[in-house]
Length: 310
Image (tube, rainbow, N blue to C red):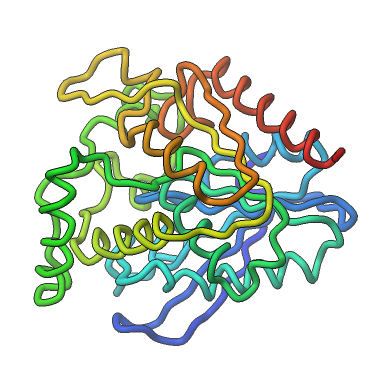
């Protein structure tokens, strides 16, 4: 399976505060309407290029769709600020449309698979989204449920981001969230993956304070209350790390988020949450080394099989 085999469906949403807005649903080939379907939502400075993930689901009898959110990847238009949003709820219309499209083409269950900020967005959607009842299961790949800062920095910097961005909506952080994560996954550096660096720069796009405030607001809502009734699986590394310089430890830890936050807040999302620790996994578990991602796939499909047999 190659990325060229996938079909694209564009959703047009008229204009927002920056002009025309679209989102793109990417569908893998050889669909069977009787099979369950997966809807994947990517993370920050990200888009869908992980064909091997679609292949793994196909081999297990699932249809696979990806949603490149507005201002990301295939949905990024020339006049837009990459990855920018003022509220996580801005993404709800494309999730609505994607779910409607998938349901119109298929009879099986729908599984939402979200990575990092995509998992955060999906979690909020499952609490407040219009078509949340279309979704039967949620799988989270290293969910962004808390900023990876110490408590005093969170207490000062996150409220400050909200205040500053009210007056300067395009103010951004001077440094990238990580100057090494891109190097850890790109075949141009230390990783094994080829992708479009115009859509996924090695240093990422700027982190705008308005975006920071939007993510923090979504996290707070989930921390205060979450009522996701469907089964949830959280895939995460066994360790997090902080790295200023390149070292091999980067290839076997989550260097972006704190896995303890995922466990603490993930268990509170609903009554049916399972945690799957993947030793040696990176932040995007499915971009880890081959033997590690094979373990992640096995644990995920075992969970799906057990849930479906109940």
